[in-house]
Image (cartoon, rainbow, N blue to C red; front, top):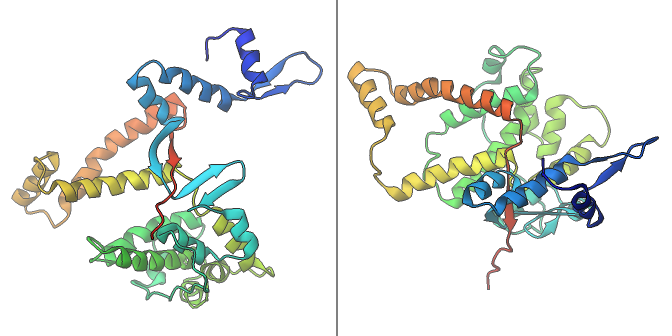
Length: 308
């Protein structure tokens, strides 16, 4: 993998750059693959821009600056606040979420009002099998919530925060919709998202809400992992479209023209894009499966500028 001499490998081990695990009953040792891959990325980074770009997507050098989360030996720190310390102080998931969004940790108890249901849970139950896992339920719910929110575009930060609070409350309530449609409204009636999860899943164990709330805080963010990177890419595209104004026509223009000529319903061009691009997506899935490496870019933590 590295193309180095054994003595060089021993040097890396002595410096703590590569961890080794001695094998009982033998004189041999195994070496942690993640450490070796990280060294390879550093080595490739000296080979030119192409190698740097390729390595940056494989847990390599940071690719963007971020003041949201720092990861070190103490764990995750959100906006400079260690997650484990906030859990120890009893900070709620709602309060920590406000910190992530605004940069300010609320001193008072945070309560997110229950949003109205945009559609009946019973309608979703008829579309999903009874054994559908919670993530599959949420995967079906989120597009429906988006379709029901016709004014979600070009909102102010305050409106976005309000919309995000409603979204998280709804996600926490809908996880048990297949098992019991009535649980959704019952979950939204609870004071916190964690208590809503307890109601949605019908948990009977004592102290469950507190345990779930702590788990939510500890897992609220983890720097630039795969899902977070996808979210940032999607948002960056939207920002670029708004800033560019009227960029040169792309293939999407042709799809819109085709849909207009054929008299297709509104939104048909986007559907055509998704259907035809699915062929390419599958091709990339197959290729990625063959390549095997994890695409996991990194973020460089930077302190947020303090006002005043």
